[in-house]
Each structure stands twice: as C-alpha cells, then as structure tokens.
Amino acid sequence: MATYINGKQYLQLTILKMTPQLHTLLTIVRDKQTKRNDFIFYADRINRLLIEEGLNFLPTREKIIETRTGEKYIGSEFVGKICAVPIIRAGLSMENSIREVAKKIRIGHILIQRNEETAEPIFFKDWLPGDIAKRYVFVLDPMLATGGSAIATIKRLKERGVEENKIIFIAMVSAPEGIKAVLDAFPNIRIITAEVDQGLNERAYIVPGLGDFGDIYFGTA
Ligand code: PRP
Ligand code: URA
Image (cartoon, rainbow, N blue to C red):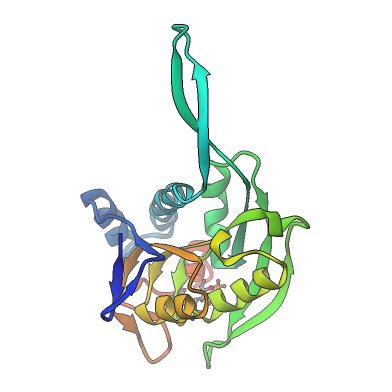
C-alpha cells in the first residue's frame, strides 16, 4: 500500500495497521508514567509485531507437501538467508524479538551514537557476518529521528555489498524527517514502522515520541 509523507508517496514505507491493540501498546510505551518493567514488556510486544510484518517481505517459493491425511497441500517456504543488525544501543532491545521467530539467524552489530548536541551520528565499530552480502538484512532501531544513524548504517551495509532491496529497516516510532531522509538517500530499502509522529523538537527528539528509548529500556535515564 502506498504511504504518503508530506504529500510525497513512499512505496517503500510500511506503517503497521493501527489496531486497537497496537494503539494501546503504543500508548503504554509513550506514557511518562509507565514503569520500566512495563515499558520493556510492551515495547517487546510492539517489536514482535514489527518483526512479524518484516518477515512478509522475504521471498518465498512454492512448496508442495503431503499432510498427515495423505493429501497434497500446495504451500510455500522462505528462500534466502537472513541477518539482523541492531544499532547499538537501543536496537539491542529488538534482538530477542527476531531470534524468537528466526531460528538460524545471524546477528551483526553496529555501534553508532548520536552526538548529544548536534544529533550527528558517530560511527564507532561494526561486527558483521562475512557473507552478509548474500543475506536479507533486518536493521533494528526503535527510533528513526533525523535518519542520520540509519543512513550511516545503510551506507556501511552497502560498502559490504548488501543490495538496497535486501535491507529492511525496522523502527518502532519514526519522524517524517527521518523517513524522508532515508528513503530519499536509499529509495530501494524498505522501512517498517508502527507509527509516524509529527516531527522533531529542537533537540532532534521525535514528538510526541516517547523520550530516550535506550535510557528507558536499559534503565540509564
Ligand atoms: C538513538 C536511537 C537511534 C538514533 C535515532 O540512539 O536509538 O539510533 O538515536 O536518531 P537519528 O535518526 O537522529 O540518528 P542514540 O545514539 O541516542 O543512542 P542509544 O541507542 O544509546 O540511546
Ligand atoms: N533517540 C531517542 O531515543 N528518541 C528520540 O526521540 C530520538 C532519538
């Protein structure tokens, strides 16, 4: 389904269907009164919904099997190998959600931190599987704000030979500015997000947003 940001159509953007359940979960994680253990529990539930949606973008092929009644069933199976790359630190919160649904997944990591004053991303280090260019790559980061951290990560993946159309960026909450910056730079990647917010404040935080995700999830606020 085509999705519009400020009047421009982004075919590569998927926003989760806003069900009563998802709206309730997002309300809990956004609420400043929510205690940390509830924040973790409900953020994990949203992450699971996002990851499940991401799996819908992996290629499949027909697989005909025989059921226990002896009859044939025209089914399907996934083709291709996958890898997840959480952006440290907040992206680590999504790692378990993908491990729960993808048994043989490889996990790379990339360490990028925003400069607190300028919001510019600073790349420190990455650890990526040697065969990453042959895999579909789920980049995991709950917050897509200016898009700087996402762009730095995707650039690094492309340097390692990953094709844009094999990159699926998963973000819980996104700012329109970040979506636009990332998809204008890399029009063939896919972004999957639970909600697109109004914009960024003067500190480049998403508003209404939820605050500093990493600090809340890991208890360092
Ligand atoms: C946060 C978040 C993203 C980034 C998003 O990380 O997890 O990585 O900011 O902002 P951007 O789109 O403007 O780049 P941060 O660097 O604050 O570190 P943290 O994960 O330790 O909280
Ligand atoms: N990082 C966060 O954790 N929250 C924001 O709103 C922006 C960047």
